[in-house]
Amino acid sequence: MARGRPCLPNLLIIGAAKAGTTSLHSYLSEHPEVFMSKHKELSFFNPERRWHLGVEWYKSNFDDRFAINGEASPKYSRFPRTLGVPERIRDVLGTPKLVYIVRDPVDRLLAQYTEVLADYEHVRPFRDILVDIENEEAGYIQLSSYHLQLEQYLKVFPRDAIHVMILERLKSDPRTELRNLFRFIGVKGDFWSPKFDLRSNVGASKRVTAGW
Image (cartoon, rainbow, N blue to C red):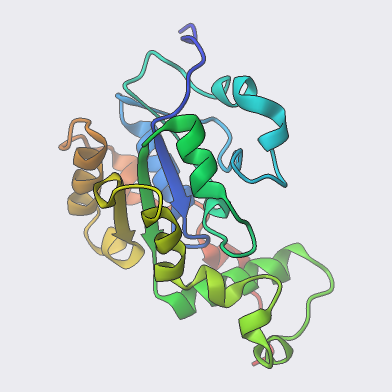
């Protein structure tokens, strides 16, 4: 089937990192009224990532035949390491639907550290990071500070433009949580796919023996 014309998205999954954004991106892409970018984490609104590629490049990742176009970039919620993201989103997209998924903050932090261990050869032991974890460059505490991250968006967007999900609830009752999500973005709420019983990018595959 031929692609439609490029367009701007009207849905963003803004985080949190290691809280199920990959699964959400996958679930939404199954819905017949939704087009999710083929590449997750476009991170267009991060100045250090792809902002320099321009709006026309960003539009090329979406398809105007669909009522809802979206992407998922957890790096959109990395305050104060990355500044000005909500303002850039507003300036380009107006007021899109924003989805923020969270999980137990300690579990999220440990999942982030486990991913770092898997991806990089030289990583400081966690006990050394704990000494000054509030100022740790990787932002372990900041990324688990969900109120801090949401606060930046609430300064720019109305509360009803933001839908907060909890990963543990999504895992225990996916039908209810996905129905609520679909209704929030304005598509058929009772759509179901067998793929919704699967989770993407499960952290168990990245587990390593921890020093602690």
